[in-house]
Length: 220
Image (cartoon, rainbow, N blue to C red; front, side, top):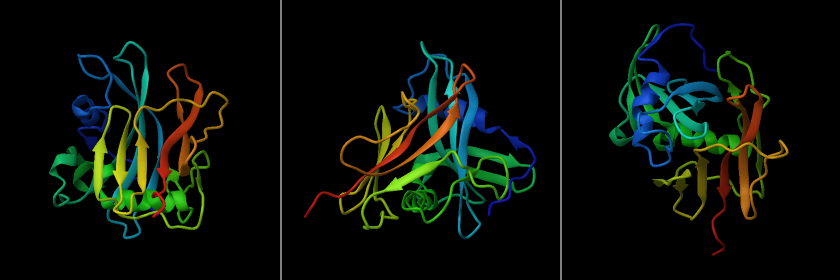
């Protein structure tokens, strides 16, 4: 299990995201830049214990309406080869030293663990407490076909980031999060799996909605 260190990070995660988010096609905030607040999220454990994996939710108050964004992040002790385009920034960790922070949709460790979460082989962990499952994160997976652990194409759209596997399987990481009207988030027709979670809405209530949706490969 990952150990959560009570220490400093310079610059902070919100400072890194404030500079990075406006470059994303799914950012719909104000022209003067985001005004971010941490709203929730969860962690996944790297089996090798080398990479920190966090699915962070932030709310932004810079647009005409508040928006909640899902930002998967990975924290590494050295640069990830070939992932310069996915670098969010670098920061100094008070215990671990310099960390390279990446968009987790482009990090194979985060993607493999997300696939394992959808299948039910791993459990989501609390964002800020060591060795504690996050009971608000739920998942489902239909059928017996394993979720690909490797997706070769990653494309950002105005609504989501789509990861595509060679067999045609698609994993959509939703970027702008929407609360389920009745509190019971369900994917649309044709979905083969999903992950749902909760975050704090700007009015202080607890919102719940889909975080990612899996679409199986089309029949041969």
